[in-house]
Image (cartoon, rainbow, N blue to C red):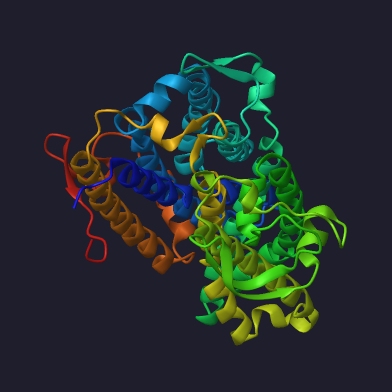
Length: 481
C-alpha cells in the first residue's frame, strides 16, 4: 500500500498540535487564578490563600513544563513536512513567532523562577508582581499565536507574489478579521478549563474530607467564575460563528450539515452526513433555528456546501460532529454553573456528594471541548492551508516520502507518550500530597541555604574539645532522618 505523505503529515501536525494545545489552555487560566490567590494573600494575610497559591503553583510548574517540551518541537515540522509553506509564509510567520519569544517567553522566564522559588525569599509584593507578570506572559504568548493562526483563516494585509507572501500592512495582518473573536473565545476557554480543573480537584478533596476550609473557598471562587464565564462563552461563540459565516461560509455549512443554500434552515441535532452523495442520510432538527442563530432572522438564508466545489469541501462529518461535541459540553458547563448557584443556599454546593462527583467528571470536559473546537476550526478550513490562497498540497515538502512521514509520526507518538506519562506521574504525586504539607515544605525551603548540595541539608552541632579549643562537627540525629 502506498503511503500518502500529505495525509500522514496532516495527521502528524494534528496530533502534535492537539497534544500541545491542552497544556497552554490550562496554564493560561491557572496562571490568572494563581495571580488572584496571590493578590488575596497579599491583601488579607490569610494563610489559606497562600496555601492554595503554593499548591496550585506546583501544579502549574508541572503542566507548564509539559507544555514547553511538547511545544518546542512543534515548529520543527514547518521545515521538515511543510517547507513550501514555511518558505512562502516566512515574511509574516517568522516575525510573529519571534515577537512571541521576545515579548512573552522572556517575560515568563524572568518571573517564573521568582514565582516558583521566591516565596519567603522576596517581599510579598514582589512575589505578587511575579505572579501577575507570569499570567500576563501567558496571554501575550496566546496573542501572537492566535493572531498567526487566525491569519491562516482570514489572510489580510498580505499578498501572494511568485509563491511568496509579502506583508502590505502589519496592522491588518496582525488584527485580521477573525482574530478578535478567536482570541476572546480561547481566552474564555482557558478560564473555563482552569476553573473546572480547580473545581474538580477541590471537589475530590472535599469528598475525602481533606483541607475542607481551603478547598471550600477554592470551590466557591470557581463556581462564581463558571457561573459568569460559561454563558459569556456562548455569546462570544455566537459572534465568532457570525464572523466565520462571513469569511468562511463553507466551514459553517459543514458545521450545520447544510448542503443546499436555502431559507428556514433547521438546526440539526443529529444527522449522518453523506459527503459522497452530498446529502444527509438521517436528520433530527429544530425547524428554522439554524437560520435564526446564523442570521438572527427566522427565515434567514444559510449557505450550502453545493456552492463549493467537491474537492474544496472540508470533511463534513468530522466538522459536523466535532461542533456538536463542543456545543454540548458548553451547555453542560452552563448547567453546572447554574446548579452551583442554586446549591449555594445553606452551603449545599460543597456538601452534596452527587454535585461534587459531577464536578470531578467535569474537570476533564473542557479539554475535550477545546480539542473538538480545534478540529472544527482547522478541519473546517481544509483543503486550504492559507484560506483561499494556498492548499495543503501546495505547502507540503516536495521531497517528503510517505515512509519518512510515517517514521516521524511514530517518533512523535512515542516521545509524546513518554512526556505525557512522566508528566501525569508527577502531577498525580502533587495531587496526592495535596495542600497538607504545602506550607511546611515552603518553610523548610525558606530555611535551606542556597549552596551546592544544600538539598541534602542536615543540621550539625559542634563538639568542643577543651584541650585545644578545636571543635568537631557531627550530625544531629533527628527522628530517623
